[in-house]
Image 1 (tube, helix red, strand yellow):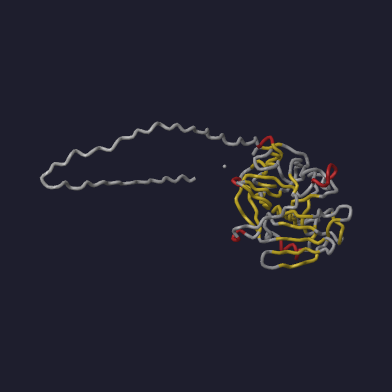
Image 2: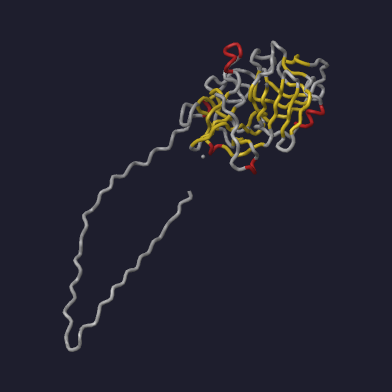
Length: 300
C-alpha cells in the first residue's frame, strides 16, 4: 500500500395531465304568432399575440476526468480531503436499513471539497478489492459528505491531517445503506465495547499502540476487509480507515501504516503495538465477517 498518489479514471418520470371542459347554451321560445328576430352573434375578440421569453436549458455540469484524479484509498495520500470537523455518522430515516447511515459506491465517482466544488480525488467503487462502503456525516441537495479511508498527509508532513478525512460525492453514484453496529476501544482500560444493535458487551483487548506509536484516537470506520493470513503474526485482520500519526510507513513494502483489529501470535500485552488493536480469537470471533463495512469505531 504505497503512499504516493497516482491518477486513475473514474448518473422522471414525466406525467401528462389531460383537462377537458364542456360548455352548452340554450335559447328560450318566442311568443305565439310572431317570428323571432335573428339572434345577435357574440362579438369575436381577437387577442394580441403574447411573446414569452424562453430561458435556455442550462448545460449539464461537466464531470471531471477521473483518470487525472488521485484514488482515495489507504494506499494513497490525498491532500485536498476535508477534515471531519466534529461531524458524526448520521442516523437513517429508514430504520430498516440500520440505525447508522452508510453509502455504498456503485461506480467510481469524483469526490469534492464542497457540493459542486473542486474535485480532490476519485472514490472508487471497490477499495482493496472490496465494495466501498462509507459512513455518511452530512447530506444536502443530492450530495453526501462521507468519511473516507485515505490519508490527507503523511505524519512527517502534518500529523493533524493524516486521519478523520471526508469528501463530498454525488448521492446518485451511491446506494443507501446502514449499520446497527458501533464499536468503542478504550486504550487506557484496554477494552473494546461492541454494540451490534441488540447487545452491548465489553471485552479485554490484548494490546493497543505504544506511547510513541499510539493507536490513532477519534472516530474511524471498518473498511470491510477481512484478511486471513495463517502462519503470520496477524492471522486474522479487520482493516480500519486510519493510519499511524507518528510513522509514515511501518510496512515498508506497501508504504503504509494502517490500523486494524487483528489476532496475534505475539506474547506481549498492553500498550506495545504499532497502533493496531490486538484481539484474542474469542473476541475476534464477535467481529469476524459480522461487523458491517462503514461501522463507526471510536478510539478513546
